Image 1 (cartoon, one colour):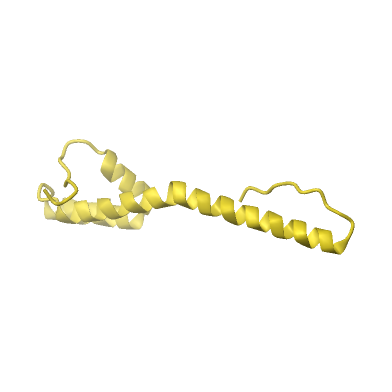
Image 2 (cartoon, rainbow, N blue to C red; image 1 turned 180 degrees about the vertical axis):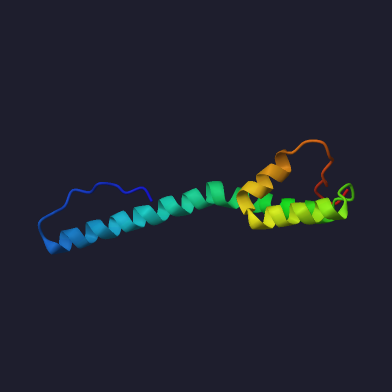
Length: 95
C-alpha cells in the first residue's frame, strides 16, 4: 500500500524496529482503506443482489441477467444496477 520512507539507522536492531513500524503503518492504512471503500461496496453489492432477486417489476430474464451481472462483476455490476434509472427499488424493511 502506501509506504512511508523511514530513516535507516546503521545498527541491525534499529532497522528491524523501523521495518516493523513501516509494516504496522501499512496494516493500519490497509484496514482504513478497506473500511472506507470496501465495506460500503460490500453492502451495496449485497443490497443489489437481494433487490434484483426480489424486485417484482423485473421479468425472469431481466432478473437472471441482473443477478449474473451483479454476481460476476461485484463492484461495477452493483453500482450499475443502483445507478440505472427507470424502476423502483425495494425499501429497507421490505415495504
